[in-house]
Each structure stands twice: as C-alpha cells, then as structure tokens.
Length: 162
Image 1 (tube, one colour):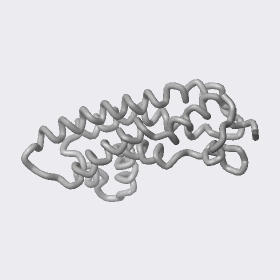
Image 2 (cartoon, rainbow, N blue to C red; image 1 turned 135 degrees about the vertical axis):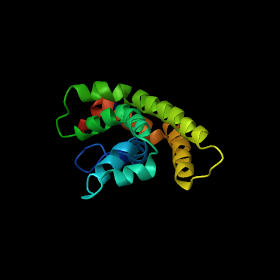
Image 3 (cartoon, helix red, strand yellow; image 1 turned 90 degrees about the vertical axis):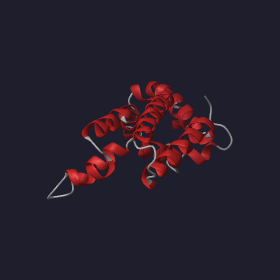
C-alpha cells in the first residue's frame, strides 16, 4: 500500500506512525479495569478501597479485566512501534480492529449486566461509561483515522519517506 495524499497527518517528522487519540480513548475505556488496578496499587494502606468504589464484587473486577484482554494485546502491539518493527506487528495489525470489536462486544454484555443488576438506581459513573461505550462504537465504526492507521501499520509502507 502506497502512501496517499493526507497520510502525512499520521506520521511524525521522522516517518514514525502516530497513535491516533481515538485509539487511546478506546484503549483507555476497555482497559479501565487495569487502570483502576494500577492506581489502586499506589494506595499504601488499603489497596482495595478504590476497586470497591467502582466494582461491587470481585467477579465484576475480574470480568472487567477479561474484557480488556483483547485491548491489552493491541496495547502491547502499540508498544512495539519503533524504527524496526518486529515481523509480527504488521500481521497483528490486520486483526487488531477485530480484537477491539471483540472487547467492545464483551464490554457491552458486561455493562448490560451491571445496569440490569442495579436497574432502578442511577449512577453517574455508569452513565458516563455507557456514553463512552457508545462513543467507542462510533469511533470503531466510522473513524477514518483509526482505519487508515491500522492499514498503514499492517502494510508497513510508512517506512518509505514518499
């Protein structure tokens, strides 16, 4: 795949691919269990206090971590974006959007179960997560930037400064 007009917005001055902000948002949404876990590790006294604020029980926390596994694999792929890409990164970039869709679907099932479990009660945090989930749907479905980013990463043609 050749670079097209407008692809310069996806590259740095050195010819490296820039990670789109939409992808950072989607990964943060799907990896929220891991983010909460890492933040809870900074508490010196009671590390489970933050997790109890977001998750009613341990099963919800473990389900949230399992929902984030496909997104975690995409994050690991993004950490390998260097001057010399490992051979598996372009191949993995072809299936990365499917992994994000898998996380989106699993997260939707988890959100439906959380809302159904606490149906008559309104929680602003859960409403914000549902709204973010819908925004992630919009981004995964319609974002040209995400689509083109994965195409360029899968083709590995962005290395040519053309």
